[in-house]
Image (cartoon, rainbow, N blue to C red; front, side, top):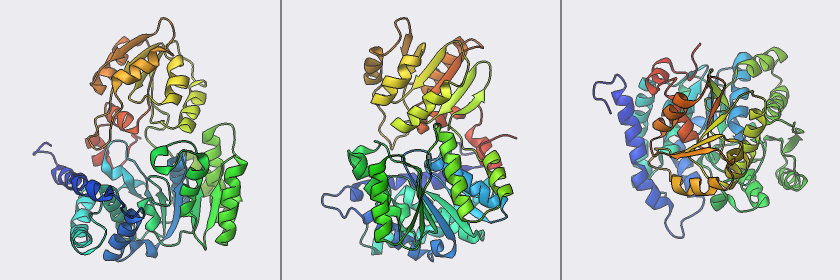
Length: 424
C-alpha cells in the first residue's frame, strides 16, 4: 500500500474487511456448525443497521452462469425506465467498489470508507453479542451495499447471489419481488452437491413465497424441481426458452423479467444496448486482439468456445490459471501457444501450474508451445511481445486472473477515480 496514495483510507478499509477472514474462516468451518449460520449472521447484521433490505424492492438472481449479465441488464433497464436502482454483484474484477453500484457509477472510495466506519459498531456487536461468530468480508460488503442503496434512495436493488442460493448470505433478504435462477451446471460441487439435482435444489432456496420466479434452464428434470417448489410456495413460475448462444439467452431472460415488471420497450432496448460487465468475453485490445473472460464452469467455457468461433485470427495464445476438465478438453486443444500461470488472491486457493501443464500436454496440438510462469503479468507481456497483429490472446479460467491483468488497460486507480470500469 502506498502511503501517499489518495486512496489510502480506501485501501485501509478493504484491508480491514479482508483481514476478518482470519476470524470468520475458523468459525465458519467449525465441526458440526449450523449450515445456515452465514444466512442467520447476515440477517442479524442487517437488523443491526436498520434492515435496509426492507426499504427497497429486490430482484434476487442466482445460477451457474449468466447471473452477473442478467443482473447488469436488469439494472440498466430499470435506470432507463427512470427508476433509482442499485446493483450488487460478486465477485469484483479489479477492486472492491465494483461490487456496489447505484445509478451508472460505483460507490465512491470515500463513501465506501464512510460505510465501513458506520458498520464497524454493528460488526463488533454481531461478533461480541450474537451467537453466529464474526461477519465475513462478503457479508459486510453486502450489508454496506444495501445500506448505501437505502441512503441513496434506491427504489430497486438487483442482487447477484455469490454462491449457490439457500446458504448464500444474500438469501437473508426479506421477500424479493423477483427470484431468478438462470441455469444450473456442475460447478462448486464440493459445497453444492455433485449432481445437477442437488445443485438445483440448493439454488432453489432463493425462491420465496410472494415473489415471481424466472428461469432459462433447459433440462426437464430441473424444471420439474422448480415447478414443485413454486407450487408449494404459491409462486408464479415463468420459463424462458433458452437460445443457442448464452448472450442471447441472458438477454431474453432479462427482457422477460422487465416486461413482467412493465418496463417500457424503450427502456428495455436501451438497457440491452448499454449493459456490460468487465471480464465477460471483453475485447480490451486490437492488433493483436486480447479477450478477457473469467469463464470457469462448463457452461461458461462452452459459451467462450462459441464466442471464439465468431472471431477471425491466425494463432491463439491462451493464458490459463485453471486446469478444470472442461477447460483442458475444450479450450486447450484450440491453442497454438499455452502459457500457464496463477492468480495472486491470497484468500483463494490457486491450481498448481505444474498440474495444469501436465494435464494440458495431452490435449495440445502437436507443435503448440507451452510456457509456465508464476508471474501472471509476465505471462501477458510474453504473449503481447510474441504475438503477431493477426493473432488472438485469450486470458480465461479465473475472474481473479482476468481482473488482475485487466489493470494493464484500466488500472485500479483509474477505476477508483472514475467509478466505472469502462472508458468512454
